[in-house]
Structure formats: C-alpha cells, structure tokens
Length: 303
Image (cartoon, rainbow, N blue to C red):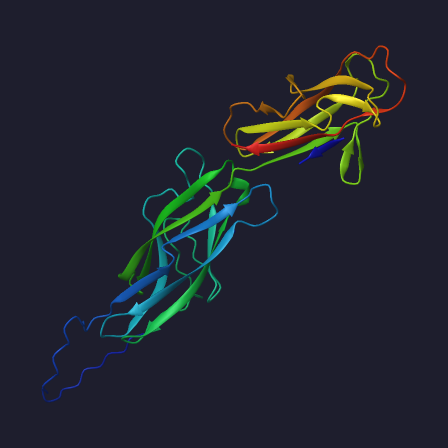
C-alpha cells in the first residue's frame, strides 16, 4: 500500500480689513493630508500555490487633514520603480489587482499610477477631520512560479484635481509564497479506505511488471522520503515468512531498511515531474505460497 503522506467656491468682497487671530504654532492655513497606512507593508502572507485559496489580503489606510483649509483629493497609488508587478528580482513579475473596497473602485497602478475615473468620488476633509478606507490586494495565482517573497515599492498619494500631491506615504505590496509540494500516483493501482493498493501479481525476482508513476508538483527542489512498515520485507500475514524487496523512484534505488530520501533534480521554478515508481523483488525461492504484503509511506518536502 502507498500513502502520500488575492469644487471649492471662492468669492471676494470688498470689506474693511479686520484683525485676524494669529495662526497657532505648527498649524498651516493650507490643505495638508497625512496618510497613515496600516500596516506599512501590504504583504499577502503564507500563500500555498497548490491549495485552493485565492492569494489576497485586506488592508486599511487613514487620511487626516492636518492643515487649516478644506482638502479635496483622490487616493492615488504611484509606482516608485516600474515595471508593474510583484518581483523578487529573478523572475517574471507577479501581476496583481488593487481594489478600493470603500467605493468599489479599481485603483491598480498598472500604467505606473492609479488611473482617475469619473465614478471615483473625491474625499473631502475639513481641518482636523479624518477618513479611513479599506483596500484589497489580490495577486494573480497563475503568475506564481516559485517560493519566496515578491514585492513592489509604491507611494500612496492624496492627489487633488490638478494631480498635485497633498500628502503621501511609502508602501510595500507583496506576496509571500510558501515552499510547497504535493505527491500522488498514476498507473496500476486501486484505492481502499483512502490508501493506494498496488497488486504486484505473481512474485518473481526482478522488477515487478506494474506500470506506476509518482506525480510530483513542487515550488522548487524537493526531497521524497520513503519508509516501510516491514523494513523492506513483503510478509506472509503475521508469519515469519518474508520476501525482501526494494523500490526505485525515477531510477534511484531506495533502501527500505530505514527511512530513505530521494532528492529531486536541481531546478528552479514551479516543477511538475512524473517519476517511474518500480518494485524490485528479491529472492523468492523456497517460500511458502500465499499473499505477501507491506505498507510503505511516501512523503515529500519542498526546499
């Protein structure tokens, strides 16, 4: 058996000049927006490319009017260094989408900055007033080809209708992809209670004529560990009769006397391998007739 273990209006009117109160220290009569992202790095954590989940995360930002005049602006994301996409410097960038959940707007900086839309409403803040927005970052799962952390540096600006920045803050977008691997079987086997059962037929010394392959999916290099309940022996029930055997994975012989490791090829990127899985039967002479069996476990670890 085998087990595998994302409009200010201004008016002027002639009037007598009146004395004005002085501006308090640290206060300005201009519009000044303070941008407070929470957190400062918007990283999608712990994404497994072989799981069914969508790589996404939800984050918040608060805009505060620290000036002495009303502020009108739209949140705009600007790339600090193109090209667009999350990258770790060695592979094609991972595309992503950025959504303003508060007013349902796509603000993804695909062309280097968020594109203004007529449907996007201005944020209006009186002096001392604040407003919080929620954003969702979604990465493109089909662009994920290896494990690691992929990032992009951006600046979130509060831009007025003349595209002037009234304030801003640096941000980091990213996705952290976990080292991950999956293993499965294809070929001549059947399932029983969640386990794969392989019939080796009439036992003869040599390679058993059973077409079987180990299917491997991994984010990079991997190790396959194989262990045998009977330490490499096919046993006749609970008796002392046994037949020695070993397995070969992708042409690499595995000694089942203890847990053995087969190392995958040294390649980078998302891997999909199909490895021949063979059973090599030992001496069968002078053995009592009957059904001999063993339980082996096959597990995989991405590196």
